[in-house]
Length: 218
Ligand SMILES: C[S@@+](CC[C@H](N)C(=O)[O-])C[C@H]1O[C@@H](n2cnc3c(N)ncnc32)[C@H](O)[C@@H]1O
Image: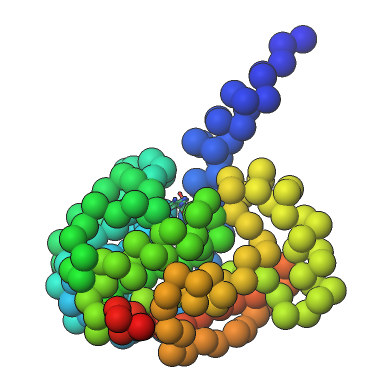
């Protein structure tokens, strides 16, 4: 009997199976509605962190001029290329992590993160970078899942987090998204908490909103 070593099996799963699974789950109708609602106020030069397979692309309004994206993984490149080719604005893709961004300070009008702060290994470092590259009047739009306010759900999120990190390639169930954003120096201007219908509460607790760059002298 032949066994595939665990490391090889995980790498095959992360390369071939998980990206398809992620793309399928995150393109569900309710996710589309949430993306559209979040991105309606995006404008000007936009940075998106954790671009994934490009599922936000059709939801950007005509008020955006350029989209710059960072994404460390290579995920379904043919599908991403088709989605990029179908939008009317230029898209500049960079394969890198958001913890260190190669952009000048104060460059972007708007930054976006959807279902990504759960996975970035150092989310506060990434958010500090996002804040640095935003214009002082810029806005950070976020749509994330995270820690429940209900202690019994949060306990299950803590218990299942180690398993989630394996099956969902680094995703955490139990991050308090608004606290991370504040820790990075943003001011949260709007925060809506909701649950995704049809998704178990441990993974369906939504954090949706907008944060602004506080005065740099503050
Ligand atoms: C659950 S997926 C969400 C993808 C996409 N944002 C969406 O809404 O469909 C999380 C994404 O975060 C990316 N990611 C992981 N570590 C990252 C990092 N350090 N910086 C930026 N993105 C990262 C993953 O590769 C993955 O594409």
